[in-house]
Image 1 (cartoon, rainbow, N blue to C red):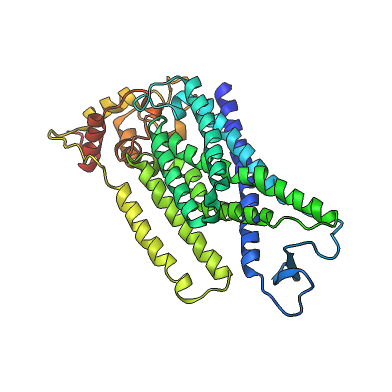
Image 2 (image 1 turned 135 degrees about the vertical axis):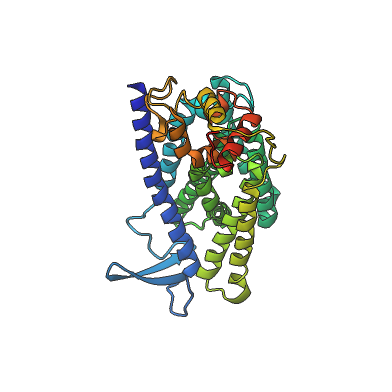
Length: 398
């Protein structure tokens, strides 16, 4: 019953996280597009910064942006904040359900660091708090007036955190924590800075005063960070299904590639929406193509090289390794207390069953160390190399 409850909670909160994430990212992308699409005309109302016309759903929309108060404040003012808040709340809840509740399987890899579940959870929560504090102090420092330098430092800090997480958690958990830390920065921007400052501006305007322009400058800096970090965060969140990312020995370098690729793609759309042409929107995709080729090449390379297996490996040898390290979960009758049935329906009760999953074994246990979960059974590099040699040789019986 506990396993079934865990699975349902995981599914429902994942569903909620996807729904709220779509809402937040959708509104964020829309307003970034809207800002870039604003055009100035001679007949704009007093105080209007620009306007944009669009068509959707059989009607026309006319949007005007005011950097200061219009002549009359509207009766109803729409705020876009709950999308961000609920995305973070649902995401943290999902991480608690999957990685805290199942810490021994998903959060901890004792071959990386032998720590208790409680210690790992405290490190996890502490890293999110420290990540926000570091980022917030960075944005409040004199570097706030040097946005490019600030972003380079932020890039380096995120990559360094990815390396640090890989020294503490399982590869899967390390990647998720990079995404969670960056998402905390993004949602923190909305909750702690952008919305409170905007409320101050609205209050001053309603009182007939002149708001301090610094609030708009602060919001622009934080919003631009959210814009450029969105695509990398999405990559981190879906990467736990692809072990060639988090399971790589240098997964922190993969994070660096993803940060660069996501930011460059966003730069293209920002520039294009602003009406730029020529070199301003022609360099991004060639650079992204080169970086993607580098990313794929990196994922196929092992820093220490492949372990050479001199002797022939047969099905009986591979079966013995799998029975020792994998069959506790991947069996018609799992003995692991974490599973009532084989995850994904993958079973290794016979060599024929094992052969049908040869590609999965290669991806999960040979090319990466994603399996066994948390390497709880202590599969060695030599055993992984033997499984790889058996699969590459065509999985011979004798």
